[in-house]
Amino acid sequence: MNTDGGVVCSPDSTDNLHAIPSGHFTQVSVGYDHACGLSTDGSVVCSGNAATDAPPGPFVQVSAGFGYTCAVRANGTAVCWSAYADDRDVSQPPGEFREIVTNGSKPCGLRKDLTVTCWKAFE
Image 1: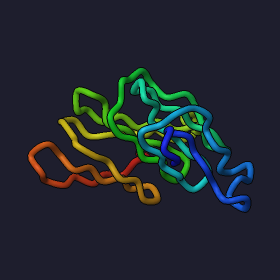
Image 2 (image 1 turned 180 degrees about the vertical axis):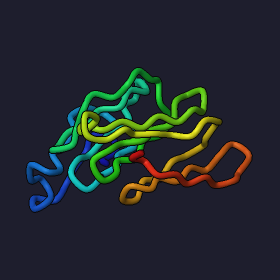
Image 3 (image 1 turned 45 degrees about the vertical axis):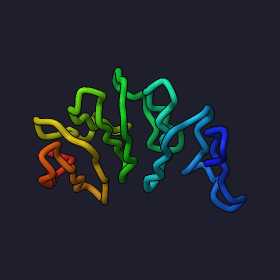
């Protein structure tokens, strides 16, 4: 990210898998086959092969995974979604989170009480 919130990638990382989302962001996350940015207004914008529209926000954090994305809403709840929703039922646990990290098909979240919860993204 540059100082005005725009995204800059090296020339060899702009293939169709990781198309650069346009806009100004406070955070960017690159998954296996897509990239997502947390816009300054709290919305999530994704692009690439596994990109799909994000559910309503506002969000405070986003993490792009392997064909899915998870984010933390402003109220602390977690939400995960996938471009392949017809093939995969993406799940998330209840409760409040500070941050979520995606890794393969098993995201983990840091809860408000500083405990960590991991779960299987696809049921």
